[in-house]
Image (cartoon, rainbow, N blue to C red):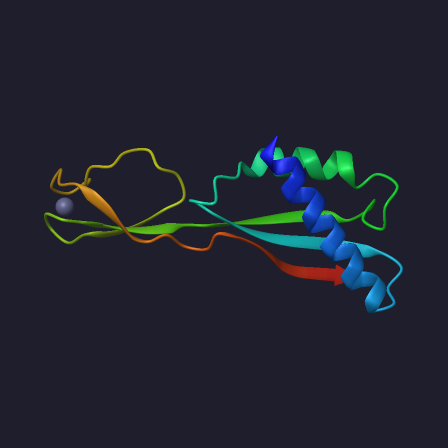
Length: 114
Ligand SMILES: [Zn+2]
């Protein structure tokens, strides 16, 4: 599963950071997940719960911020921010929505430590 290796990397990064900063515990990990990152937030949460056991992150919270992508309509110019791709036609004129800004990919946004 893709999300497991992503979470593994994230936790390693977080732990490395916390050790360098001389922290005992990580309280929260904040991730930004873009619509086009190909990552399922629920799968990340699942991987987090499994992988954090016995680590500095054992009691940490995982906060996932979903970053929308921007679409615009080729027909009427309507701009839309979407968190999920449900349909590719414009709600106003039925034109085709194209991606204008893919939004954030995937990043470790913030770490709360103790
Ligand atoms: Zn339109």
